[in-house]
Length: 234
Image (cartoon, rainbow, N blue to C red; front, side, top):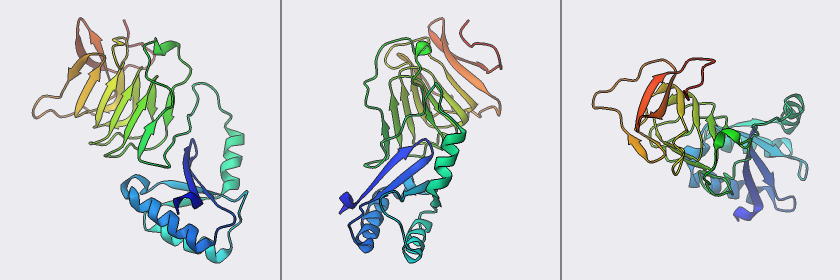
């Protein structure tokens, strides 16, 4: 029944496509099953309904909104998303569409490769909080405009930048790029790896409420204050 619907991640949030010939009751049942498979992942997300193939009646929209309200999800009109996309033209680094329809895993199609990520124009931007149980694997840099919660994992071939609180597990420079860095507005990871080195916060550690950057220097991971305008690689 899940074939009746398709949910994919875009840079504007989640996009829901409905099979035009299927009765709405069956579509709603399929959507309810899909949401129940990963309730914590979908909770609080913004969803856009693709009406290019199927328009919704008022009663159908109310049923849809009632189902989404159970997961604290909001519905964004397709017209508004299209208008926003026109206003904000995409430039490098690009926003990758996220294949979120099958499971709460963000996995790009390309393998993690050994190359200098600073010369890459395929940085992955994620404009949401990465929640517990979610994993992000990307062959280049990863930028999160949100928090990384405990139980979440990010593995990147290049740098990892978190514009929020970092409390999950991160591995930058996978597998052995020791020029990679991890930056966050509040650096408090459960586990932090850069290339082949591993670091954990000491017992009783309290994160400082300031931007910090972790890097490899003299064969060990060090953490410094993240100073605007100054490259951490010296």
